[in-house]
Amino acid sequence: MPKKLGVGVVGVGVFGEQHAKVYSQLEHVRLIGVADLNETRCAQVAKTFGAKAFGDYNELVARADIDLVAVCTPDDAHLHPVLAALSAGKHVFVEKPFATSVADCTKMASAAELAGRKLTVGQILRFDPRYHVAREAVARGDVGEIVHLTVRRNNQMASADRLGGRTSVLFFLGIHDLDFMNWCVGSKLQRVYCESTRRVLDNADDTYLALVRYENGVIASLEASWVLPRGYGKLEAEAEIVCTNGTVFVDGSANAVRVATSGPVNHPDVTYGPEVAGLSYGALRHQLTHFVDCIRFGGEPLVSPAEAAQAVAGICAMERSLKTGAPVYLGRKPK
Ligand SMILES: NC(=O)c1ccc[n+]([C@@H]2O[C@H](COP(=O)([O-])OP(=O)(O)OC[C@H]3O[C@@H](n4cnc5c(N)ncnc54)[C@H](O)[C@@H]3O)[C@@H](O)[C@H]2O)c1
Image 1 (cartoon, rainbow, N blue to C red):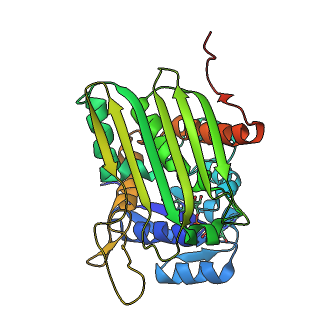
Image 2 (cartoon, protein in one colour; image 1 turned 120 degrees about the vertical axis):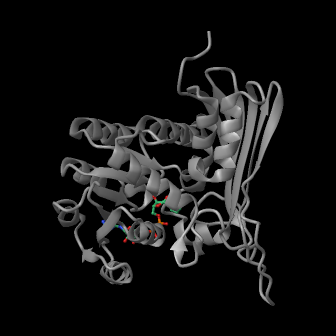
């Protein structure tokens, strides 16, 4: 029986805390420590999950009893902790987006190759049963070949309140759906065109709409937005994959449970990380268990660095398209 994997989490804000919680509960894992620049936050999360607190992630990743480092720092702060963990010989799970530039993705992927360590990225829709099952139906050929896809993810303003100005909704949410589309289509992105607008928020764009063309001729549209009313109680997300012999529709909205009080109606999360009988349940636990198993038994992670980098390349191209007002080519230009 292999020994328990030692895990450290770098960045224990909103989502890093969820990572720490899941790792603290996994059977074959021991959560050793957490690191965060915010000392109070770091100490509080460490105490909650019985781990040691580190102010400097370099000290955490250097520990001999750590095998796996989860990096949950903000979108534009993944590179340095990932490189530090890989050069210390650790396997790395880094949250999405892999990075906010293709150059940083390349640096991390090359470092993982050089170190001979596993590296994966938190493209969690691949572990959301709704999206996973839809993609399997497409991959089996149940509905023929893809003609076009439409994806959308519209969140409440609370995320923009928290993250606006620090990241864009394209990097925060749109990358989930772009990775899902790329996974379904299985072809390289050829060209993207993007529009955005800012009518509600003052520190970030409200909504992005992008048109995408793949090298195999599939076309797609992507909508990412975070200006639904604060009391709306859920996000609205869906995907439709229209194929030559049928269609697959995903209702990705969090609406299975409705809690109505005298205040706004709430739709608690039942997909990504609800607590059931004292244990974290759902897509995040499944995703982290999958990576732990890949390390323990030598499997290949469902999300490769190259695939995660393709999603980043797509989002970067959308942002370039916004600046230039023109379509941006990523792959072969048609003759
Ligand atoms: N997969 C998903 O569904 C999902 C959901 C939410 C967030 N995320 C991703 O997780 C990451 C974290 O998001 P969040 O919402 O938790 O952000 P957050 O701002 O709540 O937390 C980030 C934490 O990182 C810490 N930090 C920043 N730089 C650091 C450094 N150099 N060393 C140590 N700590 C540092 C901050 O102090 C903060 O506590 C982002 O990349 C985000 O896109 C993924």
